[in-house]
Length: 277
Image (tube, rainbow, N blue to C red; front, top):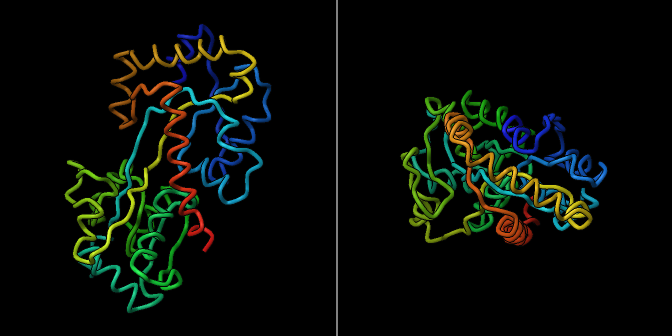
C-alpha cells in the first residue's frame, strides 16, 4: 500500500522490515523513533502485540500506540496432513489424551493458533505435555512442517494456507461461521461430540498505527494520515491489487480499531497463562 498512501500524503513512503520476536522488535523500533508522524507502523497487532505484552517481554502497553485502521482480518484453521490416520478433531484429541507424546503439531509462536492449540487441550482435560507442540517463528515454516508430514496437524491462519491445500485435510475453522473456501465445520461444531465448547479466539488483525504520543502532540497530523489511508483504500486500483493478493481492504477507522484492540487484548489476557505452560 506504500505507493498509494504516499500519493495521498504527497511524498514517498519507504518500507522498512523489522522482523523478529513476534513484532516486539518492530514495536520497540516505532516507539524509539521521533514522535512526529513520519514513521507509521504496519503490523499484525492482534495477537502478536498483545502476546508481547502478556508474556512480559515488552516495556510498553497497547495504550502506547494510536491505531489508524485495522483492515485485514483472518481466522484460523485446524488441519491435518493429508495422509494422517485421524479423521476428526475428537479422534485427534483422544489420541493426544491416550497416546502421550505421539502426536505432533505446528503453530506460529505467540499466535492465536498457538493459544488455541493449548486451549483445546485445557478444556478437554488433556495434559499439555501430552502434545509435541512445535512453535515456529513464521507461518511458512509451520505450514511446511504439516505439508511435509513432519507434524500431524497445524493451527494457523486460514489465509495463506491455500498454498498447501493439496497436502492437508481441514478439520475445523476457528469461527462462528463456516468458511466457503474450506470444507470444514466450525470449531465448536467439530467439538460437539465431545460435549465441550471453546471461546472463539480472533485470528490475526492487521493494519496501521502510530505512537500515542504522536497523536497527542500532533492531532492534526494524525488526522491527515487517517484520511490518507482512508482515501487510499477507496482506490479501485488498490482494491483490485489487494483482492488479487487475498489482502483485506476494510475501513474500520481509529475509534473502532482502538476498541477492537482493547477487546482482543482482554480475551488473550484471560488465557495468556497457557502460553507460559
